[in-house]
Image (cartoon, rainbow over all chains, first blue to last red; front, side):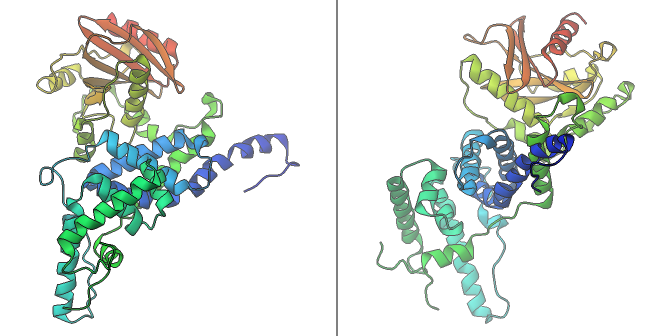
Length: 192
Length: 224
């Protein structure tokens, strides 16, 4: 709703205030799910992830005026990530109170497949999840942002607040670790 | 063995993405509305959505003395380690305001919900090494809502929540350590803070109510 100059004064005051919330809704709310997904892979459980997203929304509202460029997704993901790294321990040793992402992931199996093929795919998915689960947080987030959320290298760099060179190095280390664990079932091409 | 997928395909097929629940989205939309409301005069502003629960609580009959178990998952959020402690007054006050705002999230305000000080005070025993003074000040206009454990600026804190005409006052209490900010009043992002010390304890009252209200509260709390 855009109001142009000729409206009465009272109306003008009321509506002049309005677009900030609308801009926020348009810029940030579409990325709540992306934020939740990143938080899930950083905190490892849904309660923490949702808390982190709520805290991130509060901060995003507070600092909305600092959003200058157009990449609201990278901006919001940066906030989510900071909350995850400061308020929640993302470096917990595996197997303590961290819920494996195995435990919460849906099972993406197409029922029309042959039973043995379906079982093979399910097994592959479990192995991939377990391998990602084992990555250190900095490598895991790089892989999740790049491969799962289709961020550009520049966006991954913006979200994780490091130079692009560092992103490349983390991604390559992450891929190398995944290759160690998954080379028999995943094609890593000539990159490794 | 079927053909091996490449890494990107394998990851996208194996790793779930998550959808923000409708309630999370609705909550975020409500939060966004504050961007418009906060520039309006406070008097005319409608009760903010997050505060509505608090507002209702403050309307409850004081004599009820209800104890309601806090929603388990949310309450537990306060027991997790938070960000590092810093010694500067600036960082402390900022974190206190963050903790205050966080407490107003649905389900976050109270671990023990009671206007009965005899319920609230023993609740802290065993959960923290301090025994905060818990008084119901409803006769002075500050009804006790309850208490919770919090973690602020590197301290495990006892937090008491009081109502004040639709506002919430959080009192954070921890054992004084060297290098803390001196007593006095602070203002951060439109919130008021009042700090005083007593008997080896550091007390911080935080609210969006005016500083004069906090001073009235401190006087009532110190001399009930």
